Image (cartoon, rainbow, N blue to C red; front, top):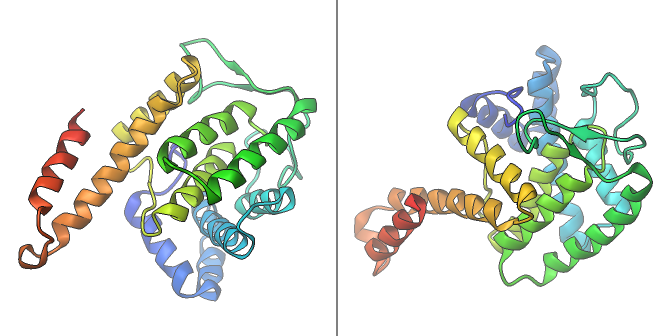
Length: 249
């Protein structure tokens, strides 16, 4: 949805429910409508489930797991540049990124050189694995890792999707019932891209972290509002008022 190539929220949610209830059914759905958008949603959920299982089993993520996750995420999805065989492989060429990471109109970001990608990702994975088991501020740390990942830009394609997948996998380690979604509306996509752009330009991942925190807060507030008034915990009104003030900042 972020790259304006995906399905809308309701269509996405229907596919997610189908996959979670019956993977074989999901394969049949894909077979009946093999659009890129539907394929991306299905592969995204499959990659997320794979990632969560590997983290649950091992409490860490190996480089092999990481590359396999990208392979699952991008399986059957052609590169935007028409290059074949990019799935699960580090980028092998120089790369310039424009929108949505463009700093200003007409400017582009020069990503890490290809001969440094493996080295930088090795360090990145060490920090990610540390965060999986010990993290005092999951949203802030996940945001910093996401911005670093996007600057490294390790793959030829699928970096944005992979960064969101890794971000939420870390978040759910600490908040199991919380997945922070991005791009539910055109306005939100603009805010998402702007927060990433400014985080990179200013070298301040806290900009994106605050945006993500507001998203998580909206999700928590929505769940609280769904709880019947007669069984809401003591002080819930005060908590919800505080959450609403945070959203408005």
